[in-house]
View 1: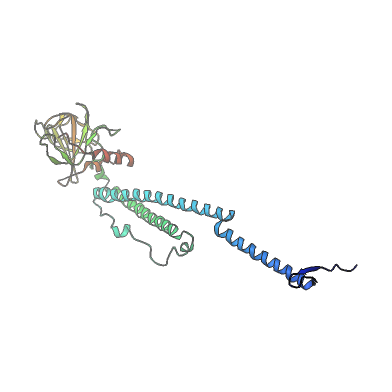
View 2 (view 1 turned 120 degrees about the horizontal axis):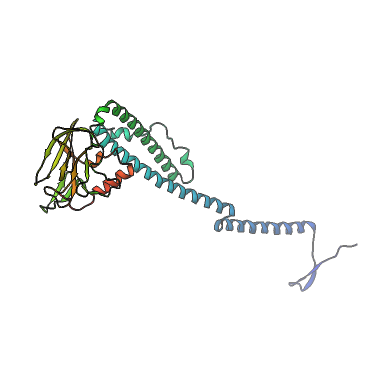
Length: 324
């Protein structure tokens, strides 16, 4: 069978001319069509990838955002842990080591870093390297602080063991029953004096309680002063605990001890009253160390948990006036 011959109309000559449909020309035409289609496909593929993410890319972006949020939360938690460590360090240096007459740990030791090679070189190659590296550094810093603090507590325990006789003579409890801390009225600090109406340093803690409430010795010692008066501190007791410690209990209604008597921590030495310059029934309590008055709130560590201690500090620092 003969192949069909195709013609096309030539507008210039106004005649029909034979169409040359060789295999070569067909191949060229097909190749041109395929090439054009491929170019268009590539163009649309690039355009789609620029303006639209694939499901896989979208999934990776969601996962990355979740990781960033988790790192942010972790950093917030590390900040809280770091603050707790700072509180422990402050109590360690200013309370425990002061009590046992031990030198505080120097800041250069607490803040010592880790030298040598860059420990975070691998992390710096990661996506979101900044937040990852900062988190790793914060974690390492807290770990070092925790190790130093643990070492410090081990040292304090050792010192305490060597000074065991001294422990009985250090004020360590509240002078009245105050389990819910609601009786803490006015603490150490500048307060409005109820009689003189001027701002004056209040050098103790006031505890509110009904008349006749029992008052306890806060450490072992000897009654050094037992004084009845209607002025100043009113009826008061001073106990000499030795090792430079004395405690004062003021505005008492009555006594349960005699001058020169030996007492133990927890013994009832008197009763809450309203004697002397006092605007309400309460106990005014002071702690003296080597002749200087110090904040009594730092000497309730035998009874209070860390949470209760923080609450006691908060209550004792409330603004207002004292009762004496």
